[in-house]
Length: 180
Image 1 (cartoon, rainbow, N blue to C red):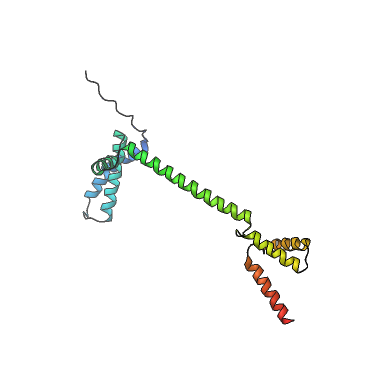
Image 2: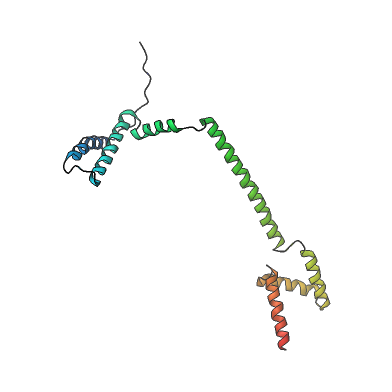
């Protein structure tokens, strides 16, 4: 005796959906035969309903829908791609490249952000500029405590971000001196 190949288990059946699909598969062709027999919206709705009903019945009886069968057959005809193992390897390589690129970008971005925060928005030559400012302050007769208080005042007022605010304040001071 020849053994029959094992068939996969059929999907669970909902009686209401099964009976509705069965009734629809019988009633919709009969409704298509009723007058007026022309290609209008009614005809397309009935054809669509018949297609869905027969698709559901085929799925319940065989475990695979008509649409899935057609998709696999058309896919096998036009499939000129790589085998599954090669596709998986290709996908893994692509994901690895994306992770490496994201890691490098986040590291460089993180380093630049960290450096910007650490430097407080200052450039690389901040030491020379600060030394020049201190010399100028000492020439004006200020002490170290005055310099510290000025720096704290700049930070407190929000002028520490850039030179634009300092330039504005020096411009205002020079204009007030001209008025005197």
